[in-house]
Image (cartoon, rainbow, N blue to C red; front, side, top):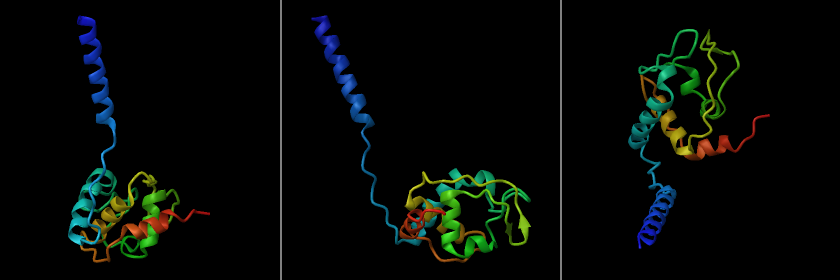
Amino acid sequence: MKKVFLITALSVTALLCVVAQVKKPQPKVAVNNPAASIERGKAVYQKECLSCHQADGGGVPHLNPPLYESTNVVGDKKKIIAVVLRGMTDRVPIDGEYYSNNMAPHPELTNVQIADVLTFIRASWGNKASIVTPAEVQAVRGVKKK
């Protein structure tokens, strides 16, 4: 009797472990709400970007570029989306300064997460640029770099 009980208990435990690992559907995200996008983007920024670009978006001189008053941030959305998706290893001037730290690519972020974090950045620290949409991120994600 003890063996039957033990086998049943182990089977139920194994089944519960399998059920717990099944991916649950994610709730729908309202992507047309800029305030919600900025709030979600702030959370992504704090997790993914803050360590290099700092809490105030000021970056680190000669290492990581600032995100405020930067033409790369408020300019062409496709370029900044591509940098987040593919990273940057080129030593190029950004607003007349060179920065030596490479930026890691973040292809693991969803289109919504990238749109949100870029919308947050483009609306923070005095930046006044348009929102980035998940569709714009998808358009850049779908284009293969030559």
